[in-house]
Structures are given as C-alpha cells and as structure tokens.
Image (cartoon, rainbow, N blue to C red; front, side, top):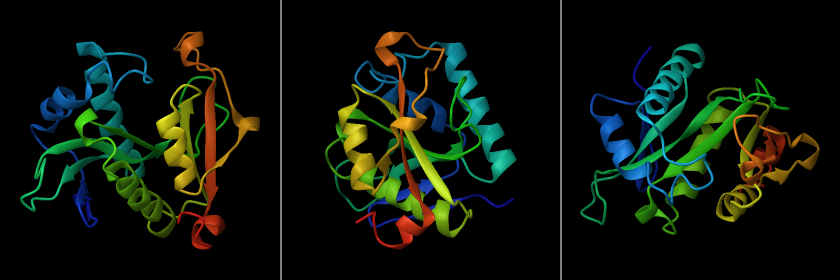
Length: 192
C-alpha cells in the first residue's frame, strides 16, 4: 500500500507521518476546537484516536488524513492545519454504521479561510471517484452551526430520519445529526 497524498490549490491531504501526532494535538486539542467533539483529550484518548486512524487506514485504504498548508510563503505555510478525510461510521448506536463518513478538524487560526471546505471537497471527490462510495454522511451536533453550514455548502442534505443518540456523550452533545450526499447528487454538481 503506497502512501496517500492528494493536493488541492492550497492544501496537501496525506497519510500521517512520524511527528504528526504531536503537531496535530498541539494545534487541535484546544477548548475551542474540541467544543463540539467531547472536550479536550486525555493521553489515553489521544492514543486511541491514533490507533483508530491506523486501523481505519489498514482496513479501508483511507482514513482521516493530515491537512497541511502548502508552502507558498503565506500564513501557516507548511504547517499542520488538522485533519480531514473518510472513514466507515462506527459510533455506538449509530444509524449509519458502515457508511462512508467524512470528517474534519482544523486548528482555530485556520477557521474562516476556506480550508475546511477545500479539504472536504477534495475528500468527497476522492470518496466518489477513487473509493467508490455511493453515499457519504457527515455527523455533528445541533450546536455546531459552522460544521452544519459547511455540510450544506458541500451539497449535503439534512437527514433527520437518521439522527441518533451517541451513548458516549451527554445531552449537550446529543443527538448526533446526520447530513448526506449521494454519488449522483455529487456528480450533478450539488457540491457547488
């Protein structure tokens, strides 16, 4: 299995390398970034996340890739911005278990610059064009308006019929709300 690398105009999406974990957690394990993701991580939960990424990549050939700013002399050039990618949905109690899921997590000083949209558009294109997805889901919670807005800008539709309770979290992070886009909708240009 070769190392994965995909470039967009401003970003590189790639497999994790030695040293990425420390860089990733330094910029994303903050109160603001983790607000809608269950809060700051313990050392055990950091290790578990890395294990899940490794196992996901081994099982599927894809997972959440490191998102790195291209070195063009601009702000944050060459730095880890976070992650974005694809996995198989597997949350406890999930109504979409096994579905291809897109997710992202970017550092706070990268918000509002279009990086999440650029990375997510690339990940969706890869899901449909390279990995053969028929549908891709995205998950968040009611309070996370920025992620919901991005899901809509990606052409995803709200699927209230698929919302579910994630037993890992309390009422402030439930229910999990689901958005989805099908391959035909993606190909028809619903992703703008």
